[in-house]
Length: 611
Image (tube, rainbow, N blue to C red):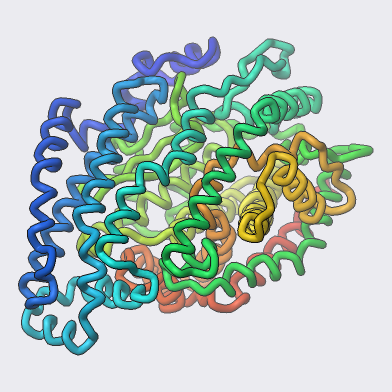
C-alpha cells in the first residue's frame, strides 16, 4: 500500500495493528521468526540459566573459573536480552494485546530469576583484592576483556551486600517494577482522552501521538482545547497517579538506604562514576541563564501577537504562515543530506536502517506512545516512531537514528560486556544529529520565513531539552528530598512544586495555567529516576561535538566516531573527555546556553526583517 493509502486510513481514526502496511513495520522477525521459536528459546534459557549457580563459591579459586563464569553469563544475558526485546517490542505494537503482555511478564520474571541466580557474583568478586585480580589476569589473558567490568565491580564494594542480601534484593525485582508497570499500563492502554476539535472544526480523538500536532496548531482555540483536555483527564486521576509516583519514590529510597547511599540521586549517578556535583552544577548553571529563557518567552509572545502568553502557546511556530510538511520518504532524504558531514559509512548505515526493517513508522491503536531506539547485541537496532508528517517528526527520526547508529558502532567495536553504552552518553549521538540537521536546513532553505521557522525549532529544542529537562531534574531532586525528610508526596504537594518550577523557568511574561500543574503525571521518565538530567547534559555535549565537526571536519568526525565506538569500555566522563568534551566542568553547558542566546538574537533579527 502506498503512503497516500496509509494517510487515508489514518485520517479516519487509529487503525488496527493488523491493517498497518508491512513496509511501515519493523522486522521483528529478525529477532525471532515467530512466537513458537521465542517460546522454545525461553524454555531452553529457563533450564540452562541455573547452571550458573554451579560457580557459586568458586569464582576466586583461579582465573579460569572466573573467566568461564563471566563468558557463560554473557551468553545467558545475550539470550535473555533477545527474548526480552522481542516480547516487549511485540507488546509495544499493541499494548492491548494480552498475549504479548504475558510474554513480556514471563521474560521479566525470568530476568529476575537470573539476577537471583547470579547474586553471588559481586560479593565473591569483592572478596578479592587487586593483587589477586592482577594475578588472575596474568594467568588467563582472556580475562583482560573484563578488566573494566571487574575494576568497576571492586569500586562498588561499599555498596554491595552479602550474597544472601543480594539474592533477596534481586527477588524483589518484580515488586520494584510495579509502579512503573502500573503507570505504563495506565498511560498507554487504559487512559482515554476526549474528542477535541481540530482546525476544521471536526471532532477528533485526542491521543498521545497527535497531542503535539494540536499544540503546534495555528488556531489558539484548538491548542487550548487539546491542552485542557489532556491535563483535565490526568487531573481526574491525580490521587491514583500521585500514589503510584510516590510508591516509586519510596522504592528508590529503600534501595538507596539498603545500598548505603546518601540518596537515590547519589545511587543512580554513582553507577556511572558521576559525582552529584555534575547534577547540581547543571541546575545552577541553567539558573544563571534563565533570563535568556524569559527573553525567548517574550519573543514568542510578541511574534504571536498575544496580550497574554499561556503554556499552550509554547509549541506553535512563531512564524504561523509557514507550514513545513514532510512525508516519511522526504524525511529520510532530508536526514541523509543533513548528516552527510559524518561520512559515507554513516549515511550508508542510515540507508540500511531506513530500508532494512529497523523502523516501525506510524501510530496504530494501542501502540506505545512516543519514540525510542532499542535492540540487542547481534541484531540491528529497532526504532519505534509515531510519525506525524511534521518537522518535529523529521527531527525525531534523526534523533532516534542517532541512538541506533551509536548502538551499531558500539556493538561492532566492542564485545558484549563492553558494548552497552550508559545512559549518561545515550543522548549525545541523538542530539548531535539534531544539531547537524538544523545546521543543514538553515544552510539550504532560502525563504526567510522558513529560516525563521527552523531557528524557532532550534530554540524550541533547547527550550525542551536543556531548560525543560533541567526543570524536570530539579523537580525530581526537590520531591525526593521532600520524601526523604518525611513529607508525603500527595497530588497537591507534587502539583505545587511543579507549578512553582514552571513559574521560575518561564518567567514573568508567562501565565502558568493551573492545568500544567498535572504535567508531572504524564512523564514516563520519572519512573526511571534521575534520568532526564542527561538530556540536558547530552545536548550540551552534542552541541560541542557538532560545533567541532562543522568547524574542524575529518579530525573531529574521527574523534566523534571513536566516542560512538566506545560502548561502556570506559566511564562516560572519560569517553567524552578523550573526545574533547569535558563534562566535569560547566564549560559545555555554558557554551550550549550561549549558543541558545546567539540563535535567539538571530531569530529576532530574521523576525524583524520579515516584519
